Image 1 (cartoon, rainbow, N blue to C red):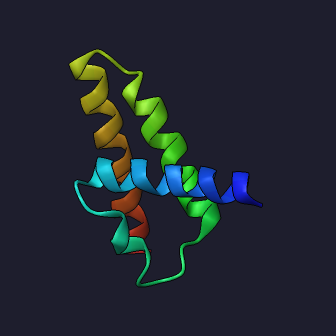
Image 2: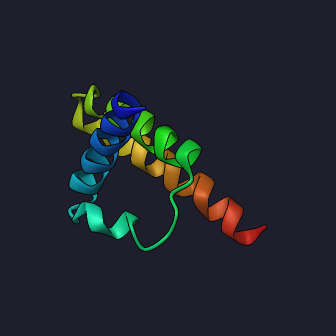
Length: 72
């Protein structure tokens, strides 16, 4: 249990850092663990993309998908 808690804490710290915020933002509401894990996976993969144009394409793709769901 302690190892899982440490892992979860580490994940939240990395996500908060990527968002430019403090980990306390996750304490106000219960975090959806699946969504947090998905966000970490996305951020980890994104960090590995080194080409600026490819990174921009990734951002544009995610924004496009999100915009499509906003319309739905």
